[in-house]
Amino acid sequence: MEPIENKTCLELTFPATESEASEGIAKLSVGLAERGLPPHKASDVKIALAEAINNVVEHAYNGIAAAKVQVTCRLDRDLLDILISDTGRPLPGYRLPDGTPAPIGTDLQDLPEGGFGWFLIHRLTSDIRYERRGGCNRLSLRFDFEPNG
Image 1 (cartoon, helix red, strand yellow):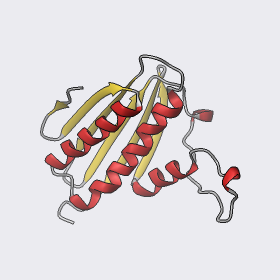
Image 2 (cartoon, helix red, strand yellow):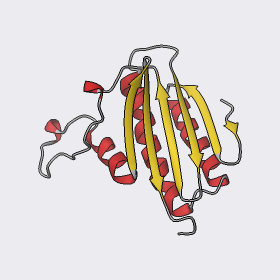
Image 3 (tube, helix red, strand yellow):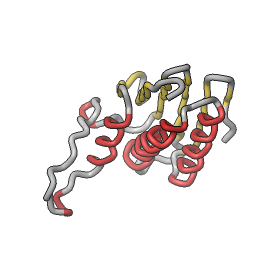
Image 4 (cartoon, one colour):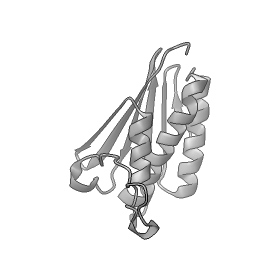
């Protein structure tokens, strides 16, 4: 798992397993920090990345062998764009979950699967988009920030 790197771009492809995903998220976090991701945005980015990549591993590739996840990050002065691509199953209905959390007081057994992760991703990003193109899922996450904030 060697990243493709330059000053503003970081690309990483890794097998879609829990351990490789965890290692990939850590490498991406370090690489983004080295390229100037503002420290006050680092934890938001890491949480959103972890939620999105873990969704790919757990849901898109559930039961599919030899699967890969590709993550491409482009860091600009005041924004970060991340594209997560995979060839697993599409999101239900070919659209993003709305990220609405379960109502307070919901019994544990009645909580929706995955609702909290999508809620976090929606809250932490400035923009989120999904498309299925040519058998590939493409999840785009954008983070806006002040360059010196």
